[in-house]
Picture 1 (cartoon, rainbow, N blue to C red):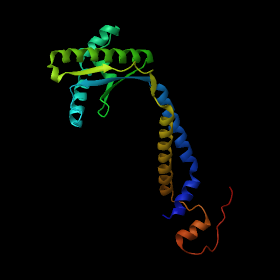
Picture 2 (picture 1 turned 90 degrees about the vertical axis):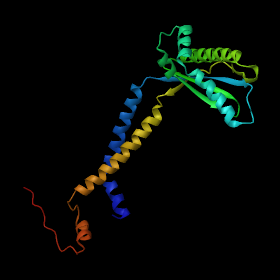
Picture 3 (picture 1 turned 30 degrees about the horizontal axis):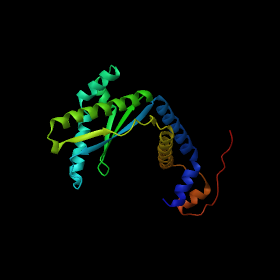
Picture 4 (picture 1 turned 180 degrees about the vertical axis):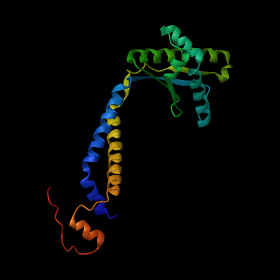
Length: 217
């Protein structure tokens, strides 16, 4: 099919594309509206001590070890006890994410929750307990192998992260438009009628000699 035929098909059935995009955007809006809001608060910890700063892999290993200590059931239970959350440790750990920045020896702890104030409280408690646990580990280790982790600052103000309504609606509308284009071409291929004399000449490759009028009943 030549490009002109594609354009003509879309021109004749543009309303299918528009309706599909509109309906899909409404579905996306409904989905976004039904989601529980999520807020994220972050706190940073600086790792120090006897670390071979010249070895990138060694630095990453140390940061990963400290990050692993953050994601433990014991730490989550202590956080739950201090904040009186009444939550399962796995539920608390499910809200916690860690990121390591080897170039600056920074461990970032991200906490997501439906309550922004609670997200900040959990982030602060996780960082504080992690620091205390790391101090205990360092105290039991030889001085030449001690690694420390200190909280750098207060948790950041919780930011709204989900749902992102505009991107969801835009993606839904785009998907709906694509579905509408596909449907328009399906209907085109299923339609075996010849809509005009010009189309008849083009399809048959023969000149049109005359028309038979349709009498009104």
